[in-house]
Amino acid sequence: MNMAMNRIMKEFKEVVANESNGIELHMPQGELTRDIPNSASNKKEIYLTGSLLGPPDTPYAGAKFNVDIIVVDTYPFNPPKARFTTKIWHPNISSVTGAICLDILKDQWAAAMTIRTVLLSLQALLATPEPDDPQDAVVANQYKKDRKLFEKTARHWANIYANGPTPEPECDAAVANLVEMGFDKEKARVALSAMNWSTSDALESLCKG
Image (tube, rainbow, N blue to C red):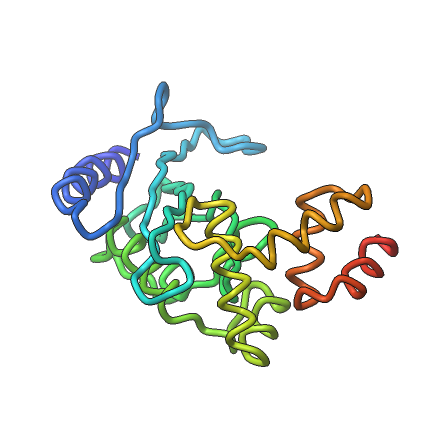
């Protein structure tokens, strides 16, 4: 853990020195390390939070997304764990859990990479989704079948959850319509997004669920 901690402190300074590219890294208040849940060992993990600005010329432009980062004790020889805590509509990020499908967080990690590499790679992923290797199949299907509808949905989610600058009034009205019928706002938004903003299909989905 000492090696991982020393490396993280060095990387933290690197990110702080380069925040102009739209990424930030934060140390949590209180303990930096925590025991691994449900583990009989004495191993600890390092908990960090990061954020990144949506790239220009994408549905995420102007929005800010937060990411939880967990550094394992074998870092940098093994990749950190990361997930979005800000909800996002993206083929490679779960719209439910924030889980991420990105090669460098799996088998393409190299010890020379850093947390800054991870944040920049996530920012690049927002600009260049990989729908053929999805984390969220519903989003990937929409991306491949109707790119404009995908971009509209992604902008709506960015506006609602990540303070994105571009509202989508039609989406807002559709959600409000279902809320007036007595449905939960978040469930209504998810159903409409998944059903390509068809109110009738979303209603059917909500009633089944």
